[in-house]
Length: 390
Ligand SMILES: Cc1cc2nc3c(=O)[nH]c(=O)nc-3n(C[C@H](O)[C@H](O)[C@H](O)COP(=O)(O)O)c2cc1C
Ligand SMILES: CCCCC(=O)C(=O)O
Image (tube, rainbow, N blue to C red; front, top):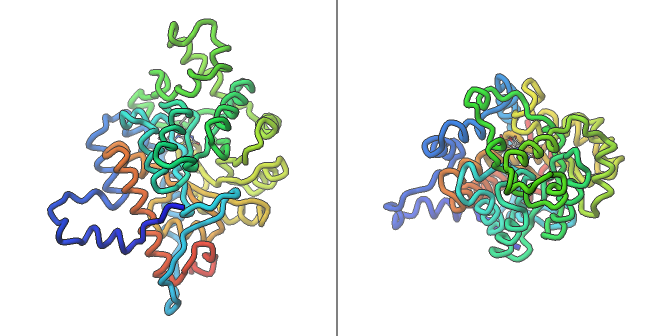
C-alpha cells in the first residue's frame, strides 16, 4: 500500500534552506482557488466556484465545520500514526477519496486523466463522474499506468434509459472500477445564478459526454451517429440525463444490474439512509453536492450525525461538501464518517497546475491530517470518535 506523506516530511521539504530558491506551490485551498481564477475564463471558473441560489448552503457547509471544535488530548504516544481505513473490503491509505467532478476538460487539457493519475500515485480512490471529458476506459488505463489496479469508483448519474445505465455500469466493471456511486441529488441541475449569468453550460457544447458518446446503448438511441449530428447527440444526452422521475424502483434496477458495491450519494435525511440500506446498498455519502443543488439545504456536516445514527453499523457512511483541510476530515470522522470526499480544491489545483498540482493539493491535505491527528493525541484515524469534539 502506498505510503501516506507524513506531515513532518512535507514541512521539512517546504522549510529546507537548500530549496529556498524554488517556487513553492500553493499549500492552501484558497491559494489554489486564486490561481485557478487567474488562469480560467469566467465561465469555467464560475461553474466550479458557484453554488445554487444565494449560495447559503455553500456557506452553511463551511459554517458547520467552523461551529465545531476539536479538543486535543496530550501525553499520548503518537509517534506512530496510521491514517489507513478499511472501506468496502479494501484498505485505503487515508480516509479520503477524490469526489466525482464532471467535465474536467474545461479546466485542463488532460481533463480527468491528470487527477486520476495523481490519485493513483497516492493510492487514494478516484471517483470518476458519468459526465467526464475522457471515457472511463482511458481513465482506468491511465491509472493502471501509474499503479496497476489503482483504486477507482464509477459515479453513475440516473438516466431515463435503463439500457444506458446498465451499459455504463457493465463498462465500469470491465474497466476495473470497484464500486458504483449513484448520485441522487442532481436529476436536474440546480438554479445556478452564476452560470445563468455567464450563459455557461459546458454540456451544451458537447463537453463531458465522453462516456455517453462512446456507449453502445446510448448510440443505439440515436437515429444517426453523434459524429454525423453532434447537436442531436447533445439533445439526446439531455433528454436521457434529466430524470426527475428517478425513484426507488429505478434504484432497485441499478442494484440488480451489478455485483459491485453500491453507494448512494446525496443522502441528507436519516429515513432515506434507512431505506437505502433496506434496498441493499453498501454505503451512503452524506452530501449536498457542494451547495450546488438546493440552496437553503442543511449543511452536509450538520446532516451527518442523524444519518450515522440511522445507519448504525450496517454500512459505512461517507461525507463531502466543505472538506478543505485536515481538521475538517477529523471533524467528519469524529461525527461518524468513515471517509470524506475532497472536491473543489482539487479542481482548482488541476486548473492551475495539472497532475502535479492535484497531487500536491492531496499531499498537503494528508500531511495536514497526519499532523492534526497526532497533535490531537490520536494515533489512528480508526480510533477517532465524538470524544474529540467539544
Ligand atoms: C464543478 C463540479 C462538478 C461536479 N460534478 C459532479 C458529478 O459529475 N457527479 C457528482 O456526483 N458530483 C459532482 N459534483 C459534486 C462533488 O462530487 C462534491 O459533492 C462537491 O464538490 C462537494 O463540495 P465541495 O467541493 O465544496 O467540498 C461536482 C462538483 C463541482 C464543484
Ligand atoms: C449534468 C450535471 C453534472 C455536473 C454536476 O454534477 C455539477 O455541475 O454539479
